[in-house]
Length: 581
Image (cartoon, rainbow, N blue to C red; front, side, top):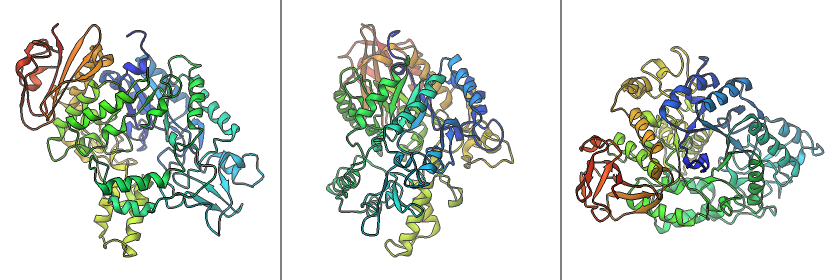
């Protein structure tokens, strides 16, 4: 393992800095808070942090609208404080990767201010400006968060392109000056010592240069109404396939265009000038691995999480397809949640035992082949907290959806809704509910910020029912200590980190597989049902030496020899054992 890249053996932990720890008492997370919690993170047992955007920003899109790539957000602290955080993490053996937003800037970035100042400004071509057509936008393209992808600028009489909010104009990556400036920004942070980047929205970096109209038969609003604000699931109906095809045709001129892979190869070459750095793409497209060694190091296995309920059949089908598709030398990467999705505990509860399922899903993440990514707060069982008033929303995606719903009701295009119904639909769409502040103790504001200070988002009130770090720290049966124990187990078990993945036959409600290296074979058995299960795995080996504390599922202690012809699993039970050769 000593010659294996660190990012293949690491467990990543995403930190949303605005919500993690408030060190100066202003209601917003910051570097001082991060520095103060480094010992906690070391004790938790994670190996690397993905830090969501920390750059200077007007925060229209919660930091993904960057106004200066070389400076931290003032409310988070200074560059010197960031360096203290970086150095403190490294001193504890924790790597740091940063979010790098390549597709767009804020409209408050000096580059865009210069670009829109006149048609003749040298930075005009740093963004995508076009004349209108027939008194309207240049074409019928949609933005992800609005009806049109084009915004008219009266001062210069042209439209600029934005795939996301109009406050996030797209950079023109066909301009070599843009590439040079953005690569210089990447070098700035690499020279400072960061360990790599998670690349935001890479599929949208280029657009069809012909600006040809999309050919979808439905508008984006039509699609939203059809989907009814639901999240994707395994449902495979003819109508669902039709909607998927309409969405593909709606955006096909705006995503994954020629040029993006060449750019990724250039960025990989830049990063490879530095030792031990990593590029992680916000995409599930296998093609971004390139030949396995010349584009991104990791892309996310998002298809795994696109289910209303995780089942062994779903997981096995996903793993079979995903692992087979990887090019030689490429390494998989798994996750079930992040800042853009509902929290794992809420998303997959399915009306059953959410705490037990959350533990089961962590075991899944830490035993599948590939690098796992976890999200801050999951380790104490934080769930979603829908907001009670549209005025509390900070995610403008949720605000936009609320406004759309109310307008459609006013127009009679959908049934009239009361405010609470509209708010519930907006909460389904908003990402705020999964970004609420970290709950540190049973104290006002969950200990995130002092009493009397309004946090930037409301704190989930279940901090007072034990969903906080302090109450769980010394409770052997807590979610926090379950996370700590599982992370320790993975770290000391080479087969769980680097072993091949071999699924085994099992009852429909159980997921059973081997992780195998030359020196070690581990058996993993996960019960996804509410009923106890007894498995006959005697054909694999006669005995297994328990690695996980088997008393958690009704057996003896770790190290006990288990007869695999009668392996007993409690409801949602977990068994991990080393096979006796």
